[in-house]
Length: 99
Image: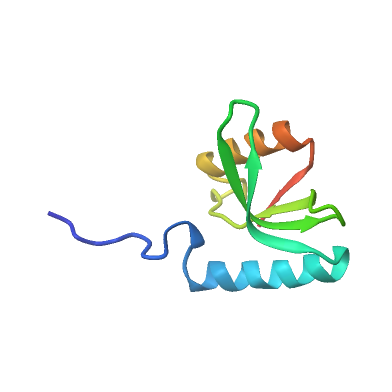
């Protein structure tokens, strides 16, 4: 039996992933005055998706979204990231940025 845990930090990702998110949160805070990591987005089907970093307006609504994730060799997001991106774009009408 394989007892290897692929990611001990779960959704938060590894240390490099977390450091990039911290940089994004700081950038978004400077740009908008409010930012949040692991921002939940309510989907029309009643489920939620979480974005890694969100720039927020004065009312706490997302105005810029970023996802830090794996990519294919050609630079496109892997399928699970593409599915999340599609869900969130449909729910928010925002252009979703994958890093």
